[in-house]
Image (cartoon, rainbow, N blue to C red; front, top):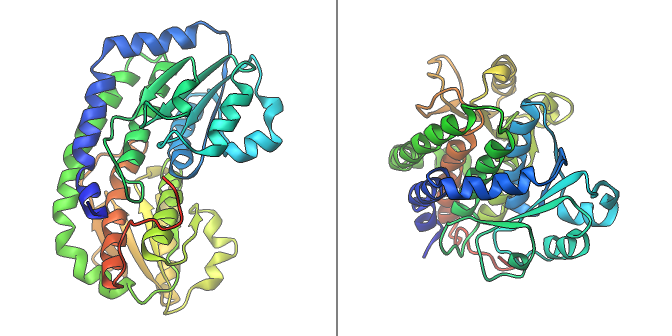
Length: 346
């Protein structure tokens, strides 16, 4: 099994988890019962690594609807912010392996203190599975490499949970179901179409010693995940930025050796994205522009167009795919074993 194999399994894994949650009235009722059994209106999502990154999307979605929700790294939450965990708070703990020490220890210490504990994991037999008022399984199958299908399946399950939290929004659940189903097919198309760009992208980006990722809103989660897999898979330095934050310091890094990945699925930040790409080009840098907009022929960027509606909440499911394929290609070009973890324990 290779990293590329697991990337190619993502569409089927997403279809499986979408059917399991959005096609099951029983699962909806079970989660709704847990949520309605308490008057708590505050939600804290926690995890480590990819599990934490995926949580940003659900929290962003809930905040857009006026829900008091935050994402806090499990280790920081355990050591510094436990006073936030009380009977007015529902804690959502995410660990794909179910064995992340920070998450397991936190849940052991606070399960009785919070209004409810909801656990997400890909491993029903894990230590984390012993905790929680309810457990939501990721249905991703076995994964040995850098997180890919467990990451996108985590996003899907967290969006399912968010849709149940937003119980007064009658069309939220149905709309998410439609978008997730559409995402499965777009994933497949993106994997197929990437082959035509592979050689050019490796040629343009392989010599670059530093590859930051820039995106805002729900795409901020993608910047975090992309930074992680670039470092794990390509053994290259990366960093994550919002479109606004990038001009406050990091813009000084740009010269002819510079390249960045810019995510552009959010209509609210498109003017910022345009200005940012012009600045990078003006200073001699390269941009891999991942977007659902039709590329400007005059642009100096390397456009990667994906036909997808303007739906920023589910777009992270799609925009991570070309990045995964890119880092796999870069790793192979550098004679590495992409996705093989020698120090990180899954």
